[in-house]
Image (tube, rainbow, N blue to C red; front, side, top):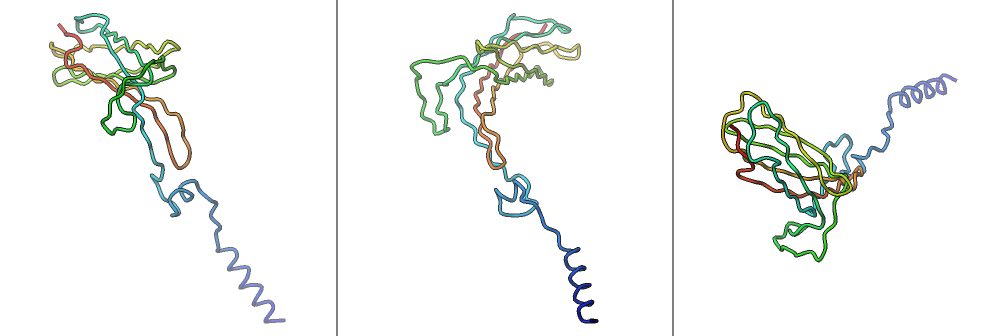
Length: 169
């Protein structure tokens, strides 16, 4: 009887200290428990992005309005191998997040928008009073996440830049 009681106590102690970990998505992808950053991101350059400022000159205190157009497929190689293509036809890209970063002197400003069914969006960026006079260097990127699974993410993207999009007076 004492032996059975001891075995029961030992069994109870062991089973209460063993934790069973649920299968986590990171574990399924990496093979290690508690792994972070196991998600792979694949970016395909499938967008052609164009931007144009509504005005050629803005004053401090105004908001710069930048017309963005995003179409697919782009003219660049979607896999990044350096092989440009000339698509026979392009279609507007709807629901794409576009971001524009402006560098005016030593000041960086940014704005975002989402394209409509026509593939167009207007990004508004307030030009603060501390922005120096000069030319605005602009960099724009368009991104749309197509697949978001525990192990992999697939995004379409495209970008463009303009060394002198408009002037600040």
